[in-house]
Amino acid sequence: MPWTIERARGEDLDLDQVLAVYRDSGLGERRPVDDRQRMGEMVRNANLVLVARDDDGTLIGIARSVSDFSYVTYLSDIAVACTHQHSGIGRALIDATRKEAPTAKIVLLSAPAAAEYYPHIGFTAHNSAWVLNP
Ligand SMILES: CC(C)(COP(=O)(O)OP(=O)(O)OC[C@H]1O[C@@H](n2cnc3c(N)ncnc32)[C@H](O)[C@@H]1OP(=O)(O)O)[C@@H](O)C(=O)NCCC(=O)NCCS
Image (cartoon, rainbow, N blue to C red; front, side, top):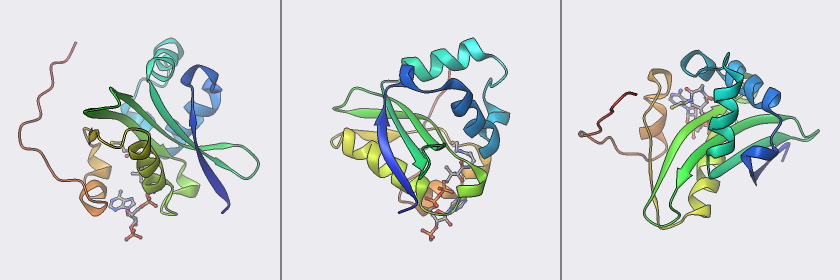
């Protein structure tokens, strides 16, 4: 396999590589990628982070969640570098996230560009999601 998936500690990740994946995937348009401090906090404070790396170790994908490892895993962000999209990495990141917390359901808010993706890989829509913005 030309890429591998592994669990990571957010604080150990190279923030520049993480930012490059967010920008390159397109998700950067919907996240505060120009605010390094906030992005650093987002990555460090997530308690379930899976990453994909290519065969030279470069970060090419990330799934960043907050989980209680029992009931629910909130998948905050998933992003795959555009050159590696549609090669199974997104599905593998979600599978690996599930394996880390197998009894927890995964909940997420989809970006518009991924709205067709989640039903395609087995997610069902929920008709009462609510957001209270800061
Ligand atoms: C959405 C994203 C994470 C998917 O990752 P990926 O590695 O490209 O997806 P996979 O290769 O695992 O795709 C699995 C299947 O979903 C399909 N798929 C991929 N992206 C899709 C999309 N945007 N819409 C619909 N289907 C999609 C693939 O064709 C594949 O289908 P198959 O199993 O029938 O061959 C990735 O494309 C991405 O980073 N997009 C930009 C950032 C973004 O929108 N993130 C989501 C934030 S909520």
